[in-house]
Image (cartoon, rainbow, N blue to C red; front, side, top):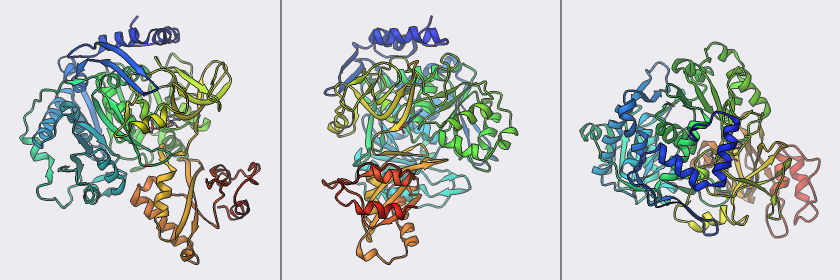
Length: 635
Ligand code: WTA
């Protein structure tokens, strides 16, 4: 039996048992048999959650791109590594073979070197979903530079914060991007961000939309001419297993975004192993994950996991609604996609459009359907199962996080019986625990609590860039000796997990994590605003939408509320990005506060969700009278 590929439920239980009883022996075997190392490790695992410090495969040397590309060249060099499906269906798709990918990554890596990028330097990548995005990620990894990909929907202010936090030396971007019928001036956003980023020495610009853009002399360089001149081979930098591979920012409930740091060896082993099993990937399969590489799902399951397995991975530039809501299904049919991985918000948006779009396309290639990003509601689950999978393709509801690097709780298709809305069982090596308010672990089944993980796994983030204390405070301080996820979960009678949602001030809107504090900070910058509070409320497509309670200063009173609403959303768009815009803005005479001055979000959440039957005890509030006022004027 190969532990690398699990096919049956009994096998899952057997391998799972081994992985938790003897984690070091287990992971050593997986790492040894399925990856290419330049030097083996001295020690499989050392860990201490109180520091916290976790090291996997210490002393080992490798380059992850040799595992993603080079080692495939002699067996599947002509196989397609990446299928690029452009925004416009009239434009031809590109098939990039492993040989071609090797050459492209090497050339790009040589350009980085010529521009003075060295091992350990940080490179910010702000690109749309075009091949250059995957290639630049791999080119950084090739030379040991740490990539920090910033989703190209973030605003210039958000981009600048991330560039400065990681002191990036270079930004890689494009002249612009296509998104459905729109074009976006990405380079303009970068120019604006860079007025505030002294650390950036150079900018590489890919051509995508062929617009006339400003090129800053001495700083900005068109990418293509440099690639054309670069040498076609690049010797990979040999990295330590624990060297950082990338930084990826995620929202916290407070403060600025957290730059999660992922290291090389453990991340590679875990993302590759989960990819193989959770998608049951076979050599001839075509796999498509609709996420953007700007998020962790794209890092782990468009780039690293699939390529480590020699897979064919689809990159889609566009949106599900362009030119119409049949686009996803057209792509599935066109490329005969076997594994399809998307988010509940996309499923709900597509379900709303009816099944006519599906019926026009042959979806019979689909063997596995995946979902990630937020809890999937029962209706969406069944719609996906009935109409896309035709009840023949198991749904893998995969729970994980930017911080975990790879999937943590998920079915293994064709092995684990699925159950709607349940992420089901912990993946191999993962030891979840549910905790009560007193910090005690809740044992047994049919219980719910806060979800923690008790034992390290290879792809966990090792720190927050530049702020290890915050890493400790956020994830390892709530419960002794455990990683705290920030999610609530329940465990049913057979031990299946269902994730019930965030228990902190992070709100997931259309699958994007948004912290309330940065949005409130943005709103409060409006000259007429005294203070504000943001909560989530249920939305049938986005999962949650944002509801803002805003108290105006005297100067703001009498102003036209619709104009104010527009201005507030404009500030949010500038500071964070359009994904953080508020659906509803209610102007209030005050915000309910505790006697210590803390805003009682619990009450605001209930009012926003139109669930005011039981507001709990409001008598201890500093200003109980505002509650009635807020209820009377609720939107
Ligand atoms: C939520 C995305 C329920 C959860 C990979 C988590 C989910 C946060 C699921 C991480 C799921 C993700 N079921 N909730 N299958 N997947 N989440 O960092 O709240 O963007 O903590 O990583 O999304 O979001 P992130």
